[in-house]
Length: 89
Figure 1: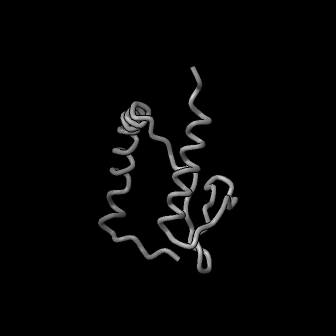
Figure 2: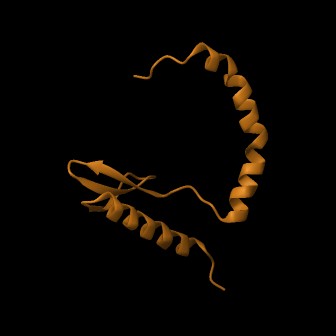
């Protein structure tokens, strides 16, 4: 259940949506120029350990008992996927 939105925010939704739409092309260009992509994996806390989950499918690729270790695993999986996407020369 989501709490009710404050009336001041409610009144400005259209304005914010317009600003986001106008800046979308610039944001996309900036993301492309720096090689940024959306994250593919995340660490999710599940009953005492951290599952490393692929965001698109929900498939768990592994687990860790500590958050820093789970994030290292996430980073390694992200790096491996990035290497797959970059064409070899």
